[in-house]
Image 1 (spheres, helix red, strand yellow):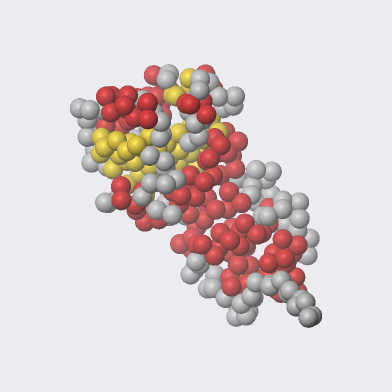
Image 2 (image 1 turned 45 degrees about the horizontal axis):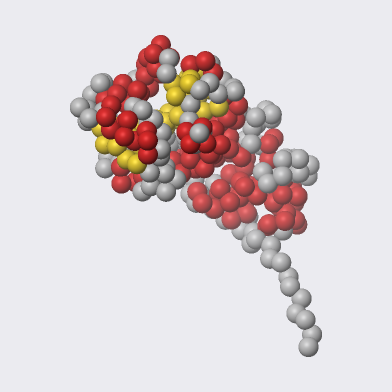
Length: 281
């Protein structure tokens, strides 16, 4: 029951394990940090290829099984929560990440991994098929949204393998996919953009999917300022964030904040502040 609560589905099929490892293509001497190592089947597969592995697992029962499985290999086992651990300490040099992510916390884990920046060369994760499609989606597609833009800002994602439910025990209700995300992403081409500020902007831009960009951003930066920027960019007032590319969104962000990603000399906008009336005594 605890393992079901943690959202764990084990890739037990040997043929699918081999296919996944072939896609990862680990090379001797590389550093890999594995998230949700479970009982260690894939951990051992990485170690056998001469890889230095840091294996992270939350379930205390599985941690003991994992330690037993990898005791003769160059594997460091970490018992802890991926969202709370000091991941930076596990990358004394540039490395790679692999993990089968619990479906219910995929987005928070990806956000945490993206903060590792230059320490990571690529991130390879098994996620729900619908999530994989969101990670690689392009503007105008139904799957395109906040997570698409954030992922493509930090990485260059691609779906490399679709995995059926029957490859796992217990089988999940949906198909899964291995997604490879190479770093860096589009951010290196977008000028001097502060990642934290840009994520705040994106959350606001995609805050309500059915609302226009003017309505979503206007509540935060001021409607008149946003409308002026849209007109300057020759964008219709009814445009939605889901219709715009990462590059166009970065240009709007630059106009609003005064950063260098296509600001075109326009003054930076200040977030709108709620005006509180003072009560007369």
